[in-house]
Length: 84
Image 1 (cartoon, rainbow, N blue to C red):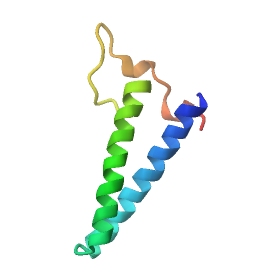
Image 2 (cartoon, helix red, strand yellow):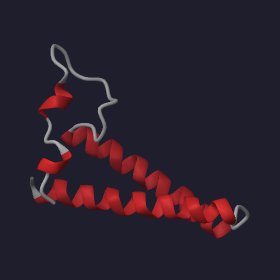
Image 3 (cartoon, helix red, strand yellow):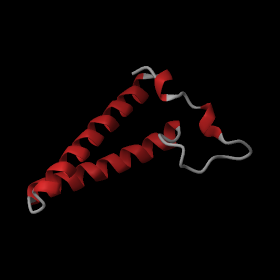
């Protein structure tokens, strides 16, 4: 795996962690405006980064339209085959 792809995956993981942690925090503190702004900011960054990753390297999940004539998800490396 090239360095750019590896870096993008690491950035996605970091953003996912932040979004999940802020989500949990907001479950207990739903009126914390600063946390909600941070959550929305990171969630937007994550969505954009995942979209860019999918355009460059293919979907992170098997729920995206696939090009004809074959289902191409199977051709991507499996998670345990990716070296970060």
